[in-house]
Image (tube, rainbow, N blue to C red; front, side, top):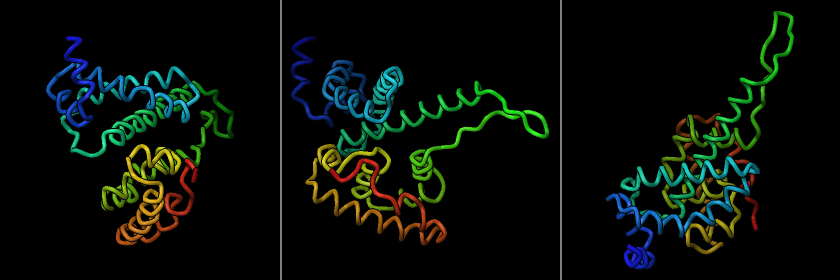
Length: 210
């Protein structure tokens, strides 16, 4: 078994994911060893709660195990981070819902109501990218542009981090990000002109330029 794992260690991510889709636990272990470290570091940058990070990392690889067959050949690091970022959003929303349920009620003229928690600017951008016309428009732009926009806006990565994640030069990240926003504007204009002022199009990437 150890020799099999050593052999798998030289396999490409795509080959490992094909093996995982076939139920190969050794390939899954190699994939975990290869990617868990940087995923943990990146999740930690976005979430200060180590327990949530641990939970999200575990859920990410459970999802990989269950849906490896759905990998369509795109860069594996980007695919893994998309899963992890979505799991983090899910975890944050679950914790926020729990916090609202446990929040003290405030007196009003008509009785009592639970204190509300206003969503952050980041949460609003993430929600816009996942639901409604913005999410629909995002699905319509070129795949290579969409993954840059997701990395820089949804995942909050810097230009350098995005370049490393996607395996492309930093200059290409910048040019694709510019083209992505232009394509997204065009797609939104067809769907709903009023969405042209969405924060996704008018704010810099969360990760910054570095």
